[in-house]
Length: 122
View 1 (cartoon, rainbow, N blue to C red):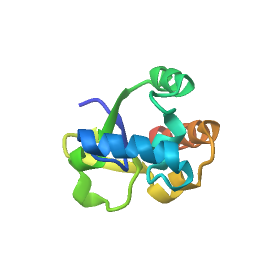
View 2 (cartoon, rainbow, N blue to C red):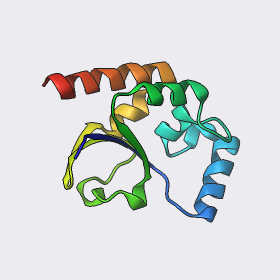
View 3 (cartoon, rainbow, N blue to C red):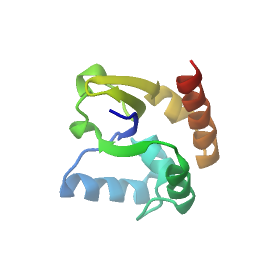
View 4 (cartoon, rainbow, N blue to C red):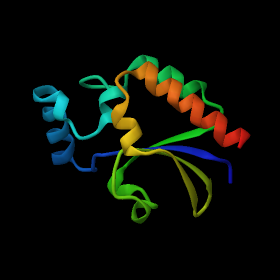
C-alpha cells in the first residue's frame, strides 16, 4: 500500500452538522472548533492556494471527518494530520494542539512540509 496523507477534521458527517459548522464559521469564526477547516476553507469552498498545495504533494491525500476515521480510537482530540503507512498503521504527524497554534495557511504549509520531510528522512 502506498502512503496516504490524511487530514482528519474536527467535524462530523451529516447535513445538520455541515449546516451547523457553516453557521458557526460565519457567526463566530474565532470559536470554531476545527482550526484545520478554518485555515483551509473559505465560507463555501476550499481555498485555492490550499488546493494547489495539495495537488503538489507527492502522495495520495484524503480528507476525513472525525467520525469516519477508522483509527479514531487512537485519538480523542481533533483535528489531526496523519500518514497512513499500511492497512492498519498510521503515524500522527500533527496533533490538534499544534494545528490550533497555526494562524495562517502559510504557517500550515511550512509546518506540513517540515513534518513530511522528517517522516521521509527519519
